[in-house]
Image 1 (tube, rainbow, N blue to C red):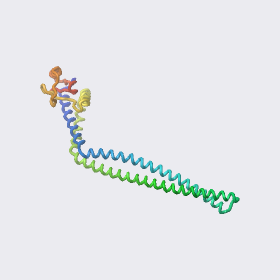
Image 2: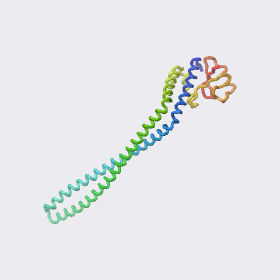
Image 3: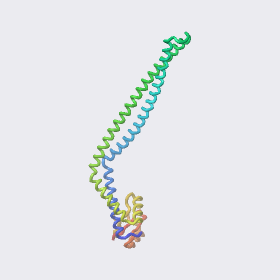
Image 4: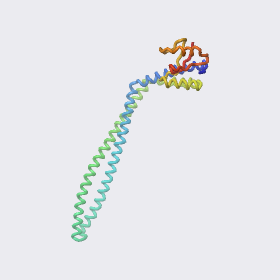
Length: 242
């Protein structure tokens, strides 16, 4: 693959910065606050799901309360009408007897509905208490999360500052590379977990213990000043510097 000496130098600098960025990110990831924040994030998600469920249950119970209250209201209205008819003595003895029987039945039904309302209201209050408790837990989790983020920010201030600086440098270097060379570099990095280019000095690959086949060394040694080698063995670009 063709690449000017300047491009080769830029590529090696890019690899150096990418390696440093990976180290900085690893440092940040290993901080205890990061693990704690992950746990808090999971806890917050659990609380959100539980709160949604609790609110839904409270709404269902509230609708049930309104339904029973409406039934009771209709029953009370009916009782009042029938009581007035009975008190006025409207109708025959048989009719009045039937009205009294109906009133007795309505009184029993009223007792059932009133007990049902009390029971449902108790459930509704418990559901509301559950929602309030979950909201308080969510507030406490949010407060802990804020404190941890502040702790992490303070501890990682230097790391974040350097990471930001290195990222800007990385972008500048990447934009200076030919598209084909950059694409090959990124492809190699994706395959190796971060190593996109290696430096060959004489018969040694810098930073690597593994030796290459003689045929591949021959290809590297024969590289022109404006060429780089893509190693199938190491799965990355080889830049010859000596």
